[in-house]
Length: 305
Image (cartoon, rainbow, N blue to C red; front, side, top):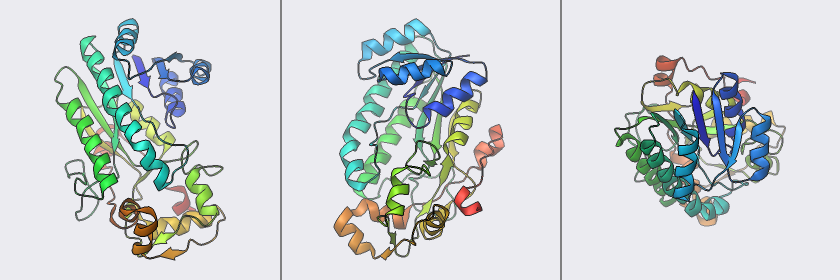
């Protein structure tokens, strides 16, 4: 299969390209950086430099390669995971996902691409009992930043599933961990903050996080090229309250026990989004992906240790 991966130099790019090439697919990886394009060539893919905000350039590339499938991993996230930097990056990230992704999807439909796989969210579900399935609503009434992100993901999914020319798959990933992620054990941004005692536990720490190892996310993405269309939660088997996973993570990396702070202090210093993450996130179920295409994620390593 001929597969174009947009956003191929992001955290999921390297493991995804590796899986696709190993499976025998002919792969083009689109990136904005010359060094990243060269790295893709060393992985066995064709690396191209592409500005997805240039609709004509996107159309030319799709017309040239004529892929059977497109995997849209477009993001514009900061190198460091802090409330300030995430907030500052949000407008550009939204533009890349909506405008750039829109160019990509329209070109896909125009040039006969059948399968379109897009990155969505598996950690912004609305309130409810138990772990959320794909039929549960997202958190449209959350804190401002979270609600804004939910609006973006909703527009992406509505755009995709509203196009009858495409076989659309929305992968609702959990929080990525593993190499080149914010939870990279060597130099991830969150890892460094925990080591430095700068990632407190907001009492009572009831927000439930759904994680996914970046390599398991890549394997699921490759499987989605042949799965039935629809939305899938791509999360591991261990959705856990931050009161459980954060102290375990600190112990796993040899960091001090996280301090406990009240929600009012976090809201005052970092805003309501930080408190929402710590107190209101809802975990997600991966049952559909397991049943449909045999998804088998590894255990969350710092809970399994």
